[in-house]
Image 1 (cartoon, helix red, strand yellow):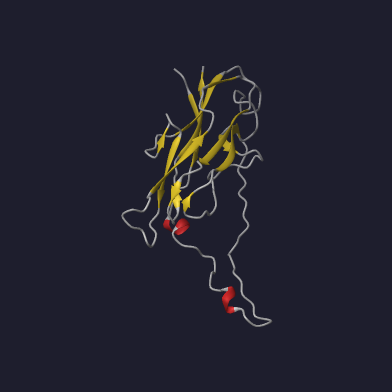
Image 2: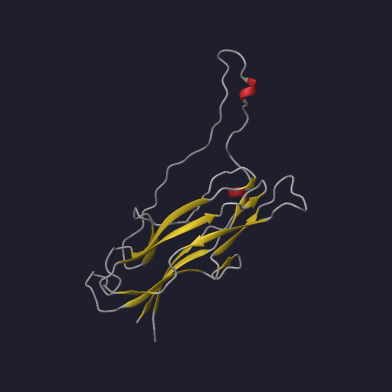
Length: 205
């Protein structure tokens, strides 16, 4: 019976706190600065943090700098409503053990003989069509929405889907992941968001 080793990246569920309101202070206007010495500006809260994970045989998905993904974010920034230009955001996804040993190694790091097949995928999700690579973004509520407001946005979500052989000495499996807004895509004002779970699996041969 085949054993399955799985590294999954859960994409953060959208919350109203994350996307519904900004904590940035937007109270000043340059129109109110008319005399020499008048000051206007804006401020945004910040914090610095780092989380250190233990090393072991556990599987994780990391970026090209060996940072473990908490959430794989594809931020296309802020664009003007209407017809959009092409926009591409890329992330590197690498499946590995937290101790960097080959997948087949024992807890001490001694390489074994187990071989696998490996594959990246998106967990079943109603907003993603694997046959077309189209990920549909949903528009969060916004003041001014009407019956003619565009409430979804089609985007491409591209990565290497093909199953691949993984040797006993291999210690990683990787792919480039792209989020693409095609040129000519129509969008009304508001925040469009799509989410899901990006997975990487190893199946024993």
